[in-house]
Image 1 (cartoon, rainbow, N blue to C red):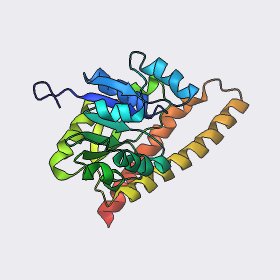
Image 2 (image 1 turned 135 degrees about the horizontal axis):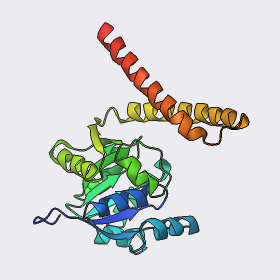
Image 3 (image 1 turned 30 degrees about the vertical axis):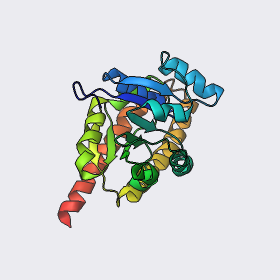
Length: 233
């Protein structure tokens, strides 16, 4: 970290729907993007759209050049990727390593931590599209933050810089958090898909706009009911 201004050289590993959006948000906060990895045509197209001035590099090159490495890859690739980079001797002492998985906690970053890197787990609780629309959504989102106590403020500060709100989730509670997010996502996606189809069938041109208020009200009602249940117990 640049001690004078707090700006970081940031590398993005993974150009799916999440990585480029996180990169764009951090760049908007003044951090310098040093590189992004992209392995498919779709990923390269997404980088060109979201991060047009950022060079596409190999993952080891990104790790070598970055003060903060953001790993935004599927859950089933995270552990192997971190361990493989450790086997190459890629991780650096004092380097920040942040993954965006909901399910994994800090243990997934243990090989990097053993090399002196600082582990952070930050999961933005939104459904990413991989487009600039997500930057606005991120500003209204919460991010689950898990980090060792001394560096927790760093993770929280990065979330705030992206425009989101941090909520601290302990390492032990990370699986329960992921289960809750998965359940809500799967339920809402199935019900909303069914509702959109029904509205279109009766001639509603913009069902999403119509359903938006209903969904927000349902969430607010659920939160109020949960609060009442908690008080009653």
